[in-house]
Image: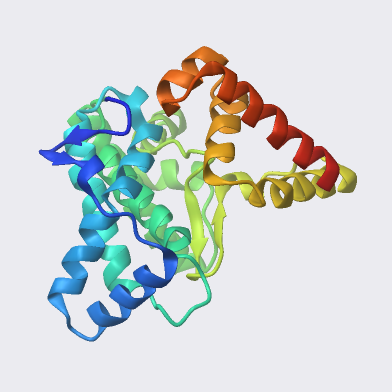
Length: 256
């Protein structure tokens, strides 16, 4: 990975055109009307979006090229199903679709191998559960499932847990094209109303900054980079980084 350049699956993202949101909507409308060229351009110009998503999965030990290709499948699905008439950014809909496709791939190619006998027991337990639910009209207990199967309760629980895929806090739970709900959104926290208001004010203030200012603050305070590291990555002097950083912070303070 190089400055402003990423080559993956033979694609140099530095050569990709950056689309503004109105341009994306126009391409999506044309693609929805059957324009294959517009669809292809929308896919090509959003490969950076796929790349940004797969960075969240780099600690899985998976081949990045494989994840990139799987992410592209999610991108294509998002493009084909997105409604450009909705008042929402494409990335709001696209990111959960890409994440979902990658997580399905990781689930199906799980590095933790479960024995055939354990998997068969789990599937039998699931079938028994459905049968008991249909028969009794309610969710059966583990004891009822194990008794019906003639297997120890501990074995049934272990088998079912062995085929369960752990959830990530960033797994999308629901998306209607306007808003996406993640697992973390359904977890209660101890934040007060004032905490939320401060965060909203900060986000609004950040939204008024230029792209360069946002990038520098993100690298400095979210990625923990020094001013020298930021200057190398952005391509300007440390003095310029320092001046832009101070100016951006002052503007945020005034707005908050």
